[in-house]
Image (cartoon, rainbow, N blue to C red; front, top):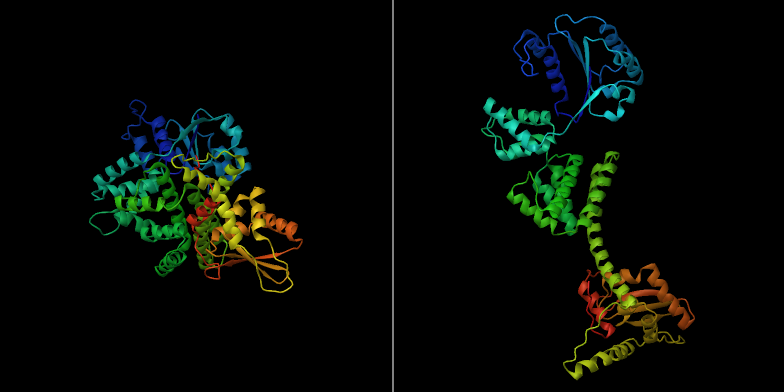
Length: 494
């Protein structure tokens, strides 16, 4: 008989193999189950029966170890009916060891049973697999882990909260053995009752306050607060690798909550915090942050300056969140331009008053006149020819460069010598408009029209008419107001 047990760690493979060894040798089996009372069962339970051999292939994976088995199988069992060999982690055997074992597995004696157990079946040769009965062990559900832990706590007089039991079951990740190990570790503490906070402390989970605070700082783009959290974590003596891993898992939980609206492990107050954080970012932004921090985790592993790498990585994550917001705004304007060029935008008409109709026709002219009036060039150098800026802006409009037209509609220019052309924004220069004009394709469209109209190559300089600098926060409302300079009322139908 050749039996092959497959499954993750702590799912009961070795325990099942020992039960099976008792079942085939039990003197008084009950419906195929071992009685655990006969002489053979008791000796197998206490490990004194030599006819049941348990071998760990992780530490005994050589040819000589397998050859000793091959020599022993020819001898009859001493007391039991069958000689049972339990080979745990069989995938750790070397190729030579597998070849040495193959002949015995092909023609095993009638009094010998082999039970093979592994967590990685893909590493087992097909010549071995084809001769075995395969049984797959699945991860144990959280509910069953909690049930078993409650039985253990009752028999051992251990007081523990339901929240702590639920946390242990989640941390076990389907492995009953891990759950029992965590419970045993917690029971050694001198406390009246085991709570969730004690479980987190013993397992090494950093304070959720730090984790949620730095996550919120990342999505808000608050670099200063994020650095303060890092300093607090370092001062508390926490390992940065573990802290980063917990942050990644926490952000994953934020994403899961945003998608499904529910989570385990967390209490009511913590779920409220997660809900608040989930509303700060879109699903794509959360995913991008997870990828960014996962790359940071890999970089930190090979770095000798972990603190510096961690701080710069978190600052990058904060900056990326701000950039993502600007990109979302740019996508909206791109979508609007595509709809304008395709002609699929319905124009709202209000036939209530004749005055409104007249304004629809007059508004473009007023906009052009205002542009012409506001954009008279200022020539500070004698001998320089003036630039017809209003004509250039209209050229942008007629050529379909709507984004450039709306961005430059209320601007004026000032020549500095023969090479530099300053574009002045009287109402202020927003970061969105600046990024739009500094885009390589948009800059080329503008310079091409300037060359065709003036016959000269210009170096363009953007000037904020209000502050004289470019330190302005993104303002989506101003970007939308520029669209209104088209001179018509439009409704966008999504």
